[in-house]
Amino acid sequence: MTHAFLSDPWFDAYRQRINADPELGAVGEWFSTTFGVTADDARHVLQVVGGQLVSHRPAPRIDGRAVFGFRAPLATWQKFLSPVPPPLHNDFFAMLMRVPEFVLEGDGLVAMQNARALQRMMNLMREA
Image (cartoon, rainbow, N blue to C red; front, side, top):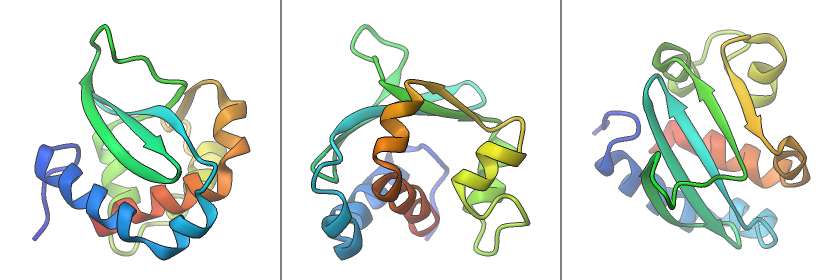
């Protein structure tokens, strides 16, 4: 069953998938941060501790601070989330370099310092 992107049921499935993923468990030990995901006007802040998704909350709120975030129109996210993404939408690195509407906001250094774990976490979005 698929759920609407960024809905509570989607986040529940995403959290379960991330927290049970052995690859993310192996590469995410030091991945602890808070980052945002924005699709059109919907923004959520995800808190990750040791490669585990511990919470998400809609933002903006006073406690909605994120170190970095990804922002794109919902249509771009839908391409990324599709079972067979079109060219340039198969990986968040490709999107950052070649899809102008997919934007990294905030402290990009923190995102890149955790690139391997973040890449796995982003790819797991397709399975949520």
